[in-house]
Length: 140
Image 1 (tube, rainbow, N blue to C red):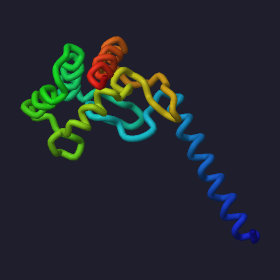
Image 2 (image 1 turned 90 degrees about the vertical axis):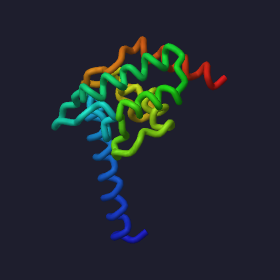
Image 3 (image 1 turned 45 degrees about the vertical axis):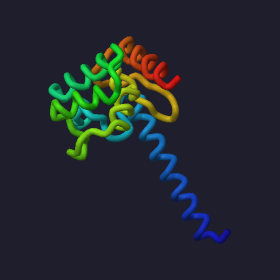
Image 4 (image 1 turned 45 degrees about the horizontal axis):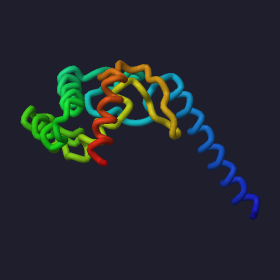
C-alpha cells in the first residue's frame, strides 16, 4: 500500500471512529441516534411528544394489549386520520414496527443495546412489555 492510500485509509478510519464516539455520547445522554418515531418531534436537542398523535398511539398500544387484531387497530388509526411520516396511510408493517419500538416506553436502541432515553415515555414499560407478549402469542 502506498503512502497516499495509507493516509486516506487512516483518515476515513479516524472519521468513522469519531462519528461512532459522537453517536455513542449522544445515546448515553439519552438522545436518539437518528430520526424520532411517529408521535415525537425533535426540538433542538430535546425530544417532545406530539400530543394528538401520542394519544392515538397510546390507544393503539392499549387496543393491541387487549387483544384487538393489528388490522383492526390499523383500521381505527386510519379512520382517525393517522398518517405515516411521509403523509401516506400507515401500513400494517409500520404499525407493527411502532408497537415493537422501545422508544415509546422511554428507551433508545443503539449498538444492539437499550439505553435509558431522556425523552418522555409515551407508554409505560409494563404496557409495552404486555404488548410484546401479546404480539408473540399471535405468532405462535
